[in-house]
Image 1 (tube, rainbow over the protein chains, first blue to last red):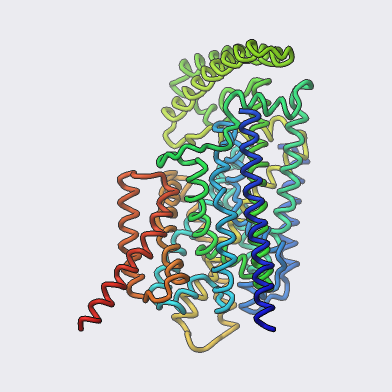
Image 2 (tube, each protein chain N blue to C red):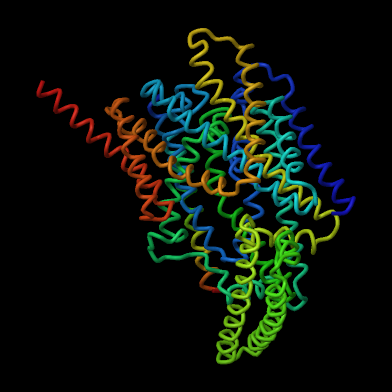
Length: 39
Length: 566
């Protein structure tokens, strides 16, 4: 039971880490678009 | 500044100090004083971490940097979100599991006393001096705006921070930082709105960015890999990752912030919030610089933004050279403005050939204008060697004080004070934690716990470090080269210290002595690389952090072989 709990906890955190990377990728993509559009 | 601005400024500062004292009343345990009883929620942790990193220089220099150099500095922060993830996976659980107060306490549990003391002492020296600089840097600029001697702005800033940090410890620091960040964010949005409002009627937000782009200010991403280039996507992602990892993972001024989280989850969420919000926040600050830049394409900027140095030049032996540069300044601005009007007209007509033609003319006019300004920089330097080399540091402040309405000036000057207070408070608090936990507790009474004595020691060491930092700030005002030395010193040690932690976490078989010797060898390599100027400083962190585990592993293999032979 405990093992199951730990796995789901890890899974929950992995989703947060992926979300952080996605935000970073979108931020870089947005900045790149700004350069393409205005520079 | 007008009376209303003074009232707004003093009112905001007094409110912060009273709020900090009120929120931290009744703190009488070491855990409460140094770790806020580990009870803070994630948004508290996140804002506190952000306020610690954002010093006054962030708000003064960053818009100026965007004005002079464009948005490329943003790339410096690209590695930060990735560093936050590593901290969440490895550092936070390790620190929480051992229930440590400081990052260095962890090192004794993993290695030995000497490794802990070495890193703690390195931290105390580096953070002690750099907190002094954190107080000094805005004080010198604020003294120019407020028209008072720099000693008074140093004392005002330092004493206000000492009052609430000594009284309430970490609790006061975190609560005031949250409020400071809320005021800072509101002020930034207000500033951005005001600049857009001040642009000519037919120039909107998009047109403003377009003009900035033509003049090379929208250089957000640079993909060429150049080892000596400070800011490109690679140095930002890789070098920035290692730098931010060592800053957030091994610098007690940051570790002390996220250890206050009420659980591992709250500390993690706080750091991830920082990872997601930091680059957009920095973008907003620099965007204001870009908008100010565009504003000064339509309205003539002052000859020199640093009014103090300009006044010195006007009363020097260089008045003739100054007059000719001044005349050129206005003549070149007129030429640039004519080129700008042509460009905008061509844009309206949507004529490709005309647009390209006027664009080149505008760029050439801007180049000539910038070269004239560089002439002023050189003249100011010739007249006063101690003059700040970067006139763009004064762009935002000059704009705030001369172009914004009464009341808003007070708020924006208050923001600069608040940012400085936020990072200085974390600095003092972490210096006190390290002094009491890593030095005093360890040496004075390692076995017996004496709550009352340690509380007293924590308060007195905060006062002591506060006075030390103010002294450094006053000393720095006479010796500007000190600032550069401190910055270099910091970046030389960061990689090695991170390397020690990397071995602690990921190389479980490597022992204390091997790590200690590897640290010394690595530090020598890093210093040699810096001395012979082999690469830009961001890369030194990478070298330090990767060399140390490699050398330690080699030593480990060698020791193992010798043992086997025996």
